[in-house]
Image 1 (cartoon, rainbow, N blue to C red):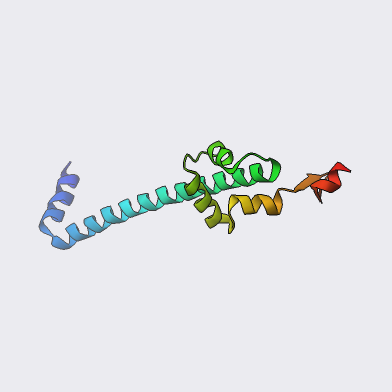
Image 2 (image 1 turned 120 degrees about the vertical axis):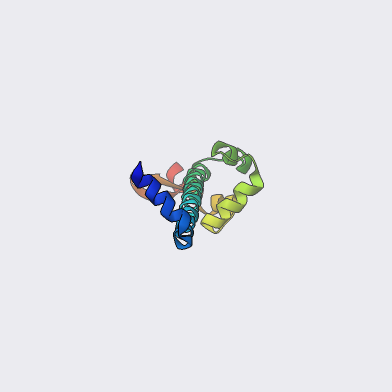
Length: 114
């Protein structure tokens, strides 16, 4: 108890100590905000990855894909998808949707049907 009073008393009398405590709190809150942003980005990456798989393997409309991976707003989904992949979901499907994996080899869908 005496230690806590001594620390509190010193911080109360010494302006530089108050500033360092304030900086510590600001740093703590900034770190926490960065952690939350990191989690949000990780969640976006997971959702975009799941959407890529759905677009490659299926023919569901983009709106259904967005909903399946957790986005209610299709415009937001398109913008986030494009930010991470460099192309819209429809462009992504047109480019990669016809490719499938067969016995470890990448083939075009028409070749797999033959």
